[in-house]
Structures are given as C-alpha cells and as structure tokens.
Amino acid sequence: DIQMTQSPSSLSASVGDRVTITCRASETISIYSNWYQQKPGKAPKLLIYGAFNLQSGVPSRFSGTGSGTDFTLTISSLQPEDFATYYCQQSFKTPSTFGQGTRLEIK
Amino acid sequence: EVQLVESGGVVVQPGGSLRLSCAASGFTFDDYTMHWVRQAPGKGLEWVSLISWDGGSTYYADSVRGRFTISRDNNKNSLYLQMKSLRTEDTALYYCAKDLGSSGWSMDDWGQGTLVTVSS
Image (cartoon, rainbow over all chains, first blue to last red; front, side, top):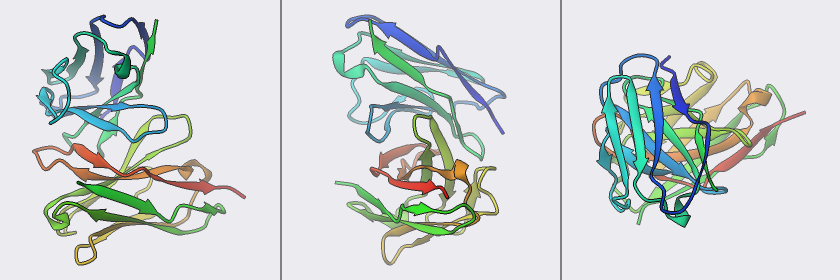
C-alpha cells in the first residue's frame, strides 16, 4: 500500500501567518493527491483535489502544489476558522490512504 | 443540497456482525461512486471501501477485505456496509462520503457518521 507521510504532525501559528504542510508519498502518485480539513466533532471537508484544484466554495487563501511524491498545502494568511486538523489522501491506486494528519493550533 | 445520513452503528461483541446504511438525497445517486471512511476515537482518517456508480466495482482496505462488503441500492438511494467478524480495532465513527466525480477519488460530501463500538 502507498504510505502518505505528513509533516509536521502539529504546528502552532498566528492569525495572518503563512503556513505550509507537506505530504510525501511512498511511491509516485502523479497528481492524485487531495487535502481535507477537519474540525473537532465535524466531518472532513474537501479543500484541494488533484494536487492543485481548489474545491468549490473553499477560500482562495488555500492552495495546493506538487506531483510525483511530494505535495504541499499552503494557507497564505491564516484566519481564526482555519485552526483544525489537515489530512492528505492519495487516490492514485487502491487502497486509498490518508496521511496521519497535521494539527494546526493557535500560537 | 446533498445530504448523507448514516445509521446502524451500535455496540457489538467481538466476532459479531452489523450492517451500516447511508441514505442519500439532493443529488443523482446513481451517477456517483460512493465511499466509506472511518475514524477511530482520537485517531486519523482511514479509507475503508468504495463502490462504483453501478455497483460493478468494489475496493477495500487491507484491514477489512474479506470481512466487510460494500453494496448499494440505486432504487433506494442507499449505500450499505455489511460488517462481519468484527474486531475491537474496528471501533470507529463510520462516514459515508460521495465521490467528487473527477479523475481519482476525492470525497466532496460527507455524512455526520455513525459510531460502531466493538466491545465485550
């Protein structure tokens, strides 16, 4: 199975900061990487699909880049509602797999 | 508005069986691949299974293959997960999710989940 390794596992940042979360696949997955945001007690929300496509309704401060094995999620200017846990997912082959998550906390 | 409502989660003993259901509305159900994703208490997300729009293709995580069966009834706009030989490590919140429909599998709509607890 393809392993997705996210870094960092947790991150403290302030409102207005630029934040980058990375995800590395254990083998090449082309551009089949997706990113989700999950807040406590809530279902995950799709942010980015196909490595760089912004899901409808998601603010433009979120962006995704990468291909092959290395992917990034960037939040250009953190807002209070962005403090949450973020997951990457590979959809190149089954079984689909998620990263372990990155918890983004307020500094 | 897309709505996905899971049901069927209960407390069950190890070795037991259970069927989860997901009632879908607000979209053309038989146009979309559907997924089950689970989350153990305090842990991350784990993809469990997917089924193609017509039920003709199904895939499973290694951890559930041979024990879980995904199915759908397009006439009833419903998705199911039959679970057998349950283990304590199957304890989780089980989400039903709709595929976005682009190339690759991404999940753009999710239910609120149904809790399965495997315990003696």
